Length: 550
Image (cartoon, rainbow, N blue to C red; front, side, top):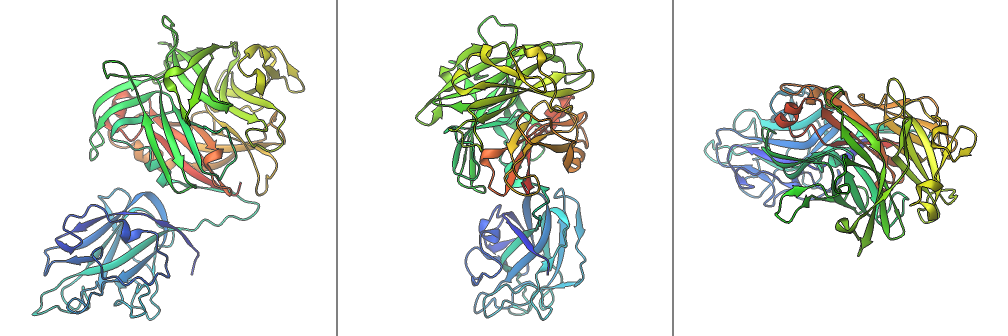
C-alpha cells in the first residue's frame, strides 16, 4: 500500500432528504476532521449520515476546497442500533469532478465498489474485500468526490429496515491527499489549496496582487508563531456573487493591508484592512503627498525596531503601453509605519524620499535583512535591497545594501557592480538575467542546496512557470533557473469561458510563515481584459504552492 498523505478537510452536501444530519446540510467538519485512519470512533452520533425512509435520491458530495491529488478514502459505515443496523451503504458509485458539475466514475482495481458493514472493533470498515481496504484513488486529481448508493434494500444498503422500506447511511469519511515523498537531495512543489482559499473573498476585500509579508516582531526565522502584516497593491473592493463569481459592485484601490496570524503552518487566519475616509468611502491606505502626479504600489517591507518600512513603486499612467500594462514607474519612496501595541499604525505613516531609481532600474522588489535582530544565518549587519534592471525584453535582478542603522538614508546605500560595492547606482550590474517583477531571496537550510541562497521568481517575469536559482552568497550571481512548478491548471481554469488575456506573475517565497522543512510560495493571476475581472472575481488573487526539500 502506498504512503498516505495529508488529511483533506472538506465541506459536505447531502443529496435527498436526511434525518442525520438535518436535510440540506451545507458543511460537516466531522466528516473529514482530524481523526486518523486508525480511529475507533463508533459512527452513531448526530453527525452521521442517514436518509429518511425510501428517499427519492441519496448521495453525499465532498468539496475538497480545490483540486488535489488524492491517495485514499477511509469509510466508517453507519451502525446505529438497533433499527438501522443494516442501513449502511453497500454497493455504491464513486465519482470525482474538477468543477462540481461534470463527474467521472471511479473504476479502480476493485470495481464495482462494495462497502463492508460497520466493524465491531470500530475501525474503518471500508471495502468488503476481506481486508477492509480503503478506496484507492491512485493519485487522481479531483476537487469533489461523490458517493451514491446503487439499488434498493439489500443492494444499495446492507438490508431492509421494515417492509422493504430502505434507508442509506454513512458514519465517518476521511479523504487523504497523495503523499509527496522528497529525498534529501530533491525538492518538489505541490499546490497549497488551503492557503489559496484564504484569499478567495466574496464581500469586502475581493482580490489583489502584491502580497508581501513582513513579521511585526522583526524575526524572519521560519516555523514559529507569527503575526504578519500583509501588503497588497491594486485591490478590488466590493461584492461578488459566490455562485456565478460575477462582480456585483467594485471599487479599485491602489493598496490595502491584512493581518495574518498563523499558529503553526496549518492554523491561519487573515483579516483584511481596507482604508476608509471620513464619509465611509473605501480609499487607499497609503497615498503620496498631495499634488503628486503618481500613486503607490507597495513593494517589499522589513521590520526594524518599532517600525515597518515598505518600499513603493511610484506609478504614473503610460497610455503607450500594451493592454494591461499602461503604466510606468518613475520613482521609489519608503513608507515608515510605527508599530503600536503589536499592530501597524497605518494612519500614522510618514514618507521618506529616496534616490533608489534610475533610468537603468529601481530598487525595493525584495528585502533581505541580514541582521542579528532578524535571526537570519550569518548576519553582517546589512539590509540587502534588491531591484529590477531594465533591458530590451524583460528585467534583470540588481542589488544594493545599507547598514541597518542607516536604512532611512538612501544616500548611504551602495550598489553591487559584480566585484565591489559602489556609491553610484548606475554601476549596479545584474546578478540574474531573469528578474521577476516581485521576487524573494531566502536562505536554504536543508537538502542538496543547503547553505546557499535561493532566488524565487516567475520565469521570464510573466509566465506560467515558477522558477528558482541558487547562489553561494547574497551577492550572487544566481545560476541557471530551475523550473519547480507550472501553473497550467490555474491558467486553463481561469482562461475558459468569458475570461481572456490571463497571465501569471509575482512569484515569491514567504520564509517566516513557512514550516522548517518546506517553503510557502505565492504567485498572482491577473488578466489584461478588464471585463474578464468583472466576469470572474476569482481570477485576481494570490495562489500558493509548497516547495518541499529546502
